[in-house]
Image (cartoon, rainbow, N blue to C red; front, side):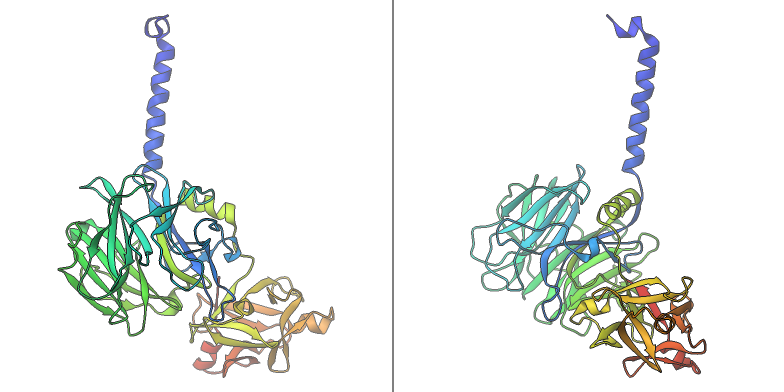
Amino acid sequence: MKLGSENPSLVSMIRRLFVFLLLATAVRAEEPMAGYLMGYSTESPDGIGNSPTLHLATSEDGLNWMPLNQNEPILVPYLGLKGLHDPFFLRKQEGGFVVMATDQADQQTVTRQDIHVWDTTDFITFSSPRLLKLHDTLMQTLAPEAFFDPEKKQYGIIWSGGTDTHRIHVNYTTDFKSVGPEEVFFDPGYEVRDATLCHEPDHAGYFLYYKDSVANRLRGSRSPTLAPRSFDADIYAKPTCDMAIGAPIIVKSLHENRWFLYGDYGSLHAWQTGDIGTDNWQEVNMRDYTPPLNVRHPTIIPITRAEMDRVIGRWGRPAWNRLKTWNFPSFFVRHEQAIGRISRYPFDPYQDSQWKIVPGLADANCVSFEAANFPGHYLRSIAEHIVLAKDDGSEAFRNHATFVKEPGLADSSWSSFRSRSSPGLYLRHANFYLRLEPVIDPLDKEDATFRIVY
């Protein structure tokens, strides 16, 4: 039977369906990026939050992050040392993603010749776990990243390591299952680590940021090509920041001509610029960004709305929040020995800063603050003091543990909390302790303004 001559209407319908599928595929391929996905391991000062596993967080703006799965791991390695650090995500040319990471079980770096690799299409299921050997030399193999080289039509895997001093090395691959020989990718003549690459067509080239291990700062180089050693000659960004810092990551804004530079120093610090081609990084005020809890050495990629909705739908939003203070944005509300106070982040036990903000115990139109790690215990006032206490079921307890949420007194995009039992008094901090006091002057308003974050 000749389908074309015997049933032309069916052929026409099939052709229309084929065109529709092609158009639908093109629309999906061109779906705009709507936010970001971060991957990271976690550490905290006393080790309570140390987890050499993969965690995920999402963000609409690249600055304020929501951890998924209650900030618990979504992927635990079972190969090699059975732990990971320095994860990296790459959207592959052929579709899907590759996940790479340093094979490391704790904070002590060890001599390794391979890295962790997984494949995923959705960051929900991960397939083909493997250890990918990059070289035969006895040296550390840290902080892998990857890029697609359009001239070579291959992927390059860059990583930190060295027998005498750390340099940035590269291996080329087409499938992340086997690699070509290792070669030096970047060596400015002093020890460098933690290289990250970004491509900016408007600036006619590529940018490489890294940790200058001598200055103990972040620096940047650029090159019109991805050829090995091409970044050695044009180091244009002087050491950024005035602290020991590493693990740089570049994030380009999806909505404006702005770039963010993150660096890891116990917690994430951020800088921004309107022109990545010039050395003009300015520190971002900590009021304007909130990294995930206990994040270390993250990777960040843009994702579509569908991808974001899918990963949030699978792993879930946190059941808790944290409260950041307006005039001390590196400080968070916590309880310590049953006393309400603020402390500079990071600290342990970090769980003391996690709160379930629930309908007010005395009025559902208000709020109460339940300690996530002590269920049934709430912040309440006793005279002017704020303490953490167990709900005794009394009307007095409910009244003193209930607060009216209002626009922030120092910043209306933040929040302030007025006592329901004493309407003229506000929750504020003074000398790092929480108190219930009247708000009289501008400083009082700053002390009484908080931001609800994750």
